Length: 286
Image 1 (cartoon, helix red, strand yellow):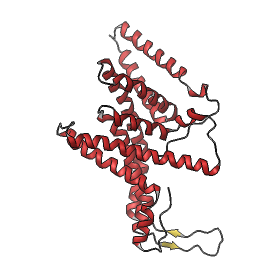
Image 2: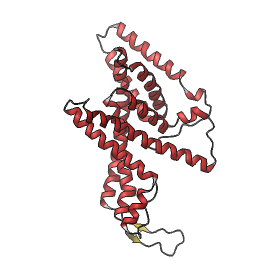
Image 3: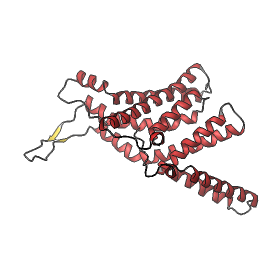
Image 4: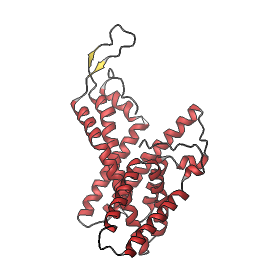
């Protein structure tokens, strides 16, 4: 996160400098995403999912998502170019970047039929990105922090600044709810796969393309996210309890065991580390 402009500048110039940064465009993108999501939610509540405003809000959500994740991917690429770092694993290495994955899925959702559930994970991420940027950049720009104690005579001493109460409250909110929200995101992503599977079973338009692409996306998420792994583990435990209950037909248990076996085989066959030795997948920063 880029530091806010110097506090000794006039407010107009501080805002102008802030608005000229690529990070500000990233912030506006997330803010636009949340606004579009809220507007679509109002249409959804009133059962007007396919009204002109609802369709526009739905598409705008994923346009904004593509822009924000595209900015992060571009900044990552530019940083590599400046430092001379090279991606040693080629295309697979780029695809292992979670920002690239979310960018790709945003573009997929943009051009596919509406799946409102797909908007929610992006919306939850945007809440925290907007909150973090507001705390770290927007508030210090509008209300520069005051020095509590000067640096002093020690060469290693640094001046201490006050923290605005609103910025402190936002920081506490992020710390308190971030992990829980990421668990909610992982649960929504698994639920979305189930929704797509049902669409594929009933041969809805482009459903088989979507289920294939989203399965690859969710497989990558599983390999990179502890929250997704925990959500799958909880789901497996719940189904085990239901299937293991007294009175469950043996055929149901056999189907469930066969399903688990097939999933494990799929997991092993799609393990990228088998094909890219020693490659660490970059973590998502947006």
